[in-house]
Length: 217
Image 1: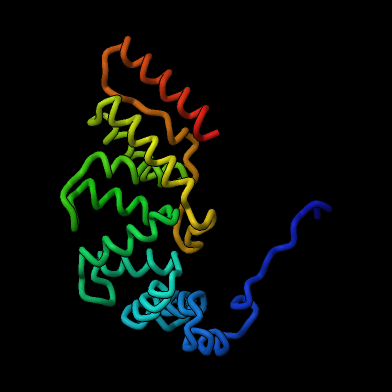
Image 2: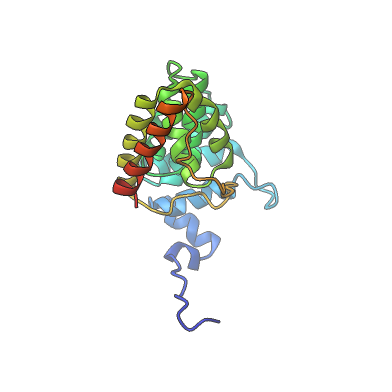
């Protein structure tokens, strides 16, 4: 073991039994409410019940738990354990995405791309795909590289700047759901491929590199 290794910080919820977690959840503890929701999504534990899981996710979401906001939004989007409601799904997914939840950002990008719950908007799709890709969501990186070809250089630069503002405003730097599958993308999230003539293309890439150096490093 390395001498400079930092000790793992264990939350109070992780140190208590299932019965105690349930008690904490019933008393309004957001993290305990999330854990109760996750408990009812597990087939392995023999307690899978989507309807009960969603009820706990909703409680935790209302109490500001970002992972629960994503889970609740996803349940609303898919109609899993609850009546499907695209508008409410968008509300909760956007809330989680604004706070840095990578999978929520990717899902929001898909909603903008396909026009689910809101009007189709390639610019917003690119914005959220880009933010999710920056956190290692490979599917979002692939989608971003497709939609970027539909944007102008000026649109790309403006959206890069907005992405920087959003990422700096994250209330938490570690909100990825441990049960979600996120794979690190080896490509730079800011490697853009705008469809322009060669002279302009070089100028745009140089501008983007300069902006990246000044604003995001």
